Every structure is written in C-alpha cells, then in structure tokens.
Image 1 (cartoon, rainbow, N blue to C red):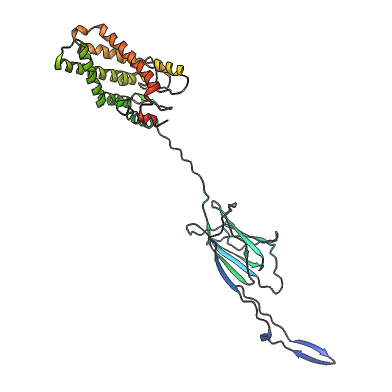
Image 2 (image 1 turned 180 degrees about the vertical axis):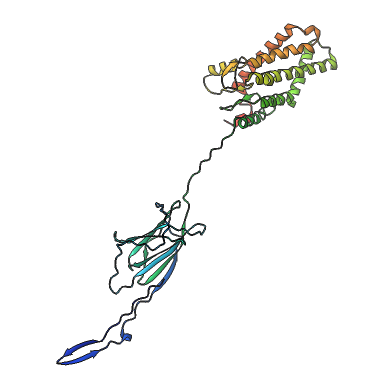
Length: 379
C-alpha cells in the first residue's frame, strides 16, 4: 500500500492597507517539490534468529498500540510490511509481530493474518526500528535495526521461522525372549583362539533366562560342532593308546571308542544342558563374574558345578548338571564293554566329569575370556 503525500494548497491571502485591498496568489508551481513515496523490499534471510516466546491468535494484522508517536509536521511518514512463513514456505497466521523503536514508548504489536501478512504504518523516518516475530512451536525471528527514509514503504521478504532444535530420546524395549535369543547368537560365536567352542558361558552383565527352545538350540549347536567331533576323535586315540575302555585294538576298536565318545558327549550335553534345565527351570550356562577379589572369583568358579542360577534369577543346587552326569554315566552301561559296566562306571564317569567341569570353570573365569576374540572385544 502506497502512502501518498497530501498536496499543500495555499488560499489567496487578502490584506487591507490604507482603505484598499490587495490579493496575492502563490503559484503552486513555485512550491518546492514534495517528497515522492519510496517502495523497497529487502531480503531478510540473513537475519539472525532469536528464540522468543510464541503466541497464537486468529485475528488479522494491523492491530496497533495506542502509543503511536505522531510525526513532526511536514515529515512524510513510512511503513513496514511483510509475510511470515515457515522454512517450507507455508504462511503462518496468528504470529505475534512487535515493532520497537528507540523510545520505550514507541512500541507496537500486530498479529499476522491468515495469509501471514502484517503491516505497520505511520513510522517515523530516520529512526531505527527492530521487528521481532514469535509463533507457537517455532523459533523466534528478529530483524537488524531498520532505518526508513521519509515516505518509504519497506516490505520485508524471506521471513522464515524455523522449528527449534531439540533432542529426541527414543527408548526401544525388547522382550526377554528377544534378548535371550540375541545372547545365544552371541554365545554361538564364542570360540577360544577363534577355534574351540565356548558356547556355555555368558559374559553379559545382565543375562536373561533361556527359553526351552534356546536351551535345546545351544545343546544341539555344542554337540554337533565340527570341532567337537575332532576332539572326540583325538580323545579316542588317547584312550586307544591307554587301552581303555576294554574295546579291541585296531581300527574297529578305534571306531568303537569314537562312537562311545559321541554318545557320552551327546547324552551329557542334552541331559545336563537341555532336558533337565528345561524340566527344572535352571540355566545351564556359566555366568562369568570378572570382578571382585581373586578369592571371590575362585569360589564363584569352583561352585558352578554344584550351584547354578534358576530361571527365576535365584541361586539353587545344580541338579541339572549333576543329574546330567549321572544319567549319562548310567546310559553308557548300554554300549560299554561288559567288563567295564556296573555302578562303578556310573560314578567314575560322574566324578571325572564333575572334576573336569570344575577345572574348566576356573580356567573360564581367569583365562578363556582373554583367549576368546568375540568376548575380548566387549572389554
């Protein structure tokens, strides 16, 4: 909107001197040229943002405070207008616009219309003003000092209110089954020196109980691992060299010892690591302590074959491990030579297996994590 200066009209002046009258008329062309209106649009994208308190509203722009300063006589006033938008170019209605001059009393407010427009009229030229804009939920905007010339109409462009920077925290919750499954996936990758299976230990400081399905999965993985068969074949050769148990010598005897080793391993793992733990709701894994005094860690390791953690998180006698050793020893009476069968075979296997498990727990607590690459990377 252009502000047109009002033309100055001078009426004939009449004076009476010495009983007569003289008329004088001033020719309008002799008047000085009036100031011409000026229109200017300046980009404001370079203006600094400033966080202001937002305010929403639904009335049209143009509401001005009553403390407008009147321009001095003979000075053509100026105007400022603009459109409030967001960073995507969408207009923002109901934004609060504040015009502030140097004089504390020279302050006005307006509210942007539904199209985002606003305008301030009757602005004193030659005086610096600032415009501050606030809208609910958006970052405030403030102009640099604006000094207008007489009759200037200033249109502010590129007024873009941004969304305030904020940090968003997202918490993802997983079920215990999902967490347990992930822990088993991690355990299946644990190998001493990157070769030997180290599946039945958890280094997680916050382990969750395994489901029945996961207990069987871990047992199957351990009993069918290729390295397990290599170990059985090696021990069969050692037993054959020692002529125990009382199988014949030669390849037939070696095959019998390999078969017995496979059966011993499978029954011990499945009964002690899956079947009984599922029935008794016990966890078959070794829980790495890793902290505390050497004495406390040693006691923790030695107690593992006899004390375990239940699926309820409480410690309890390790019926699963001890019972698995006894059942495996009893089943071995079916396929061992008759000369080796009997109660002695059951308890001999039980004590040997339990002793081996105790030693393995000590090594597990103090050494094997350092030799397990995937576990060492968690330090």
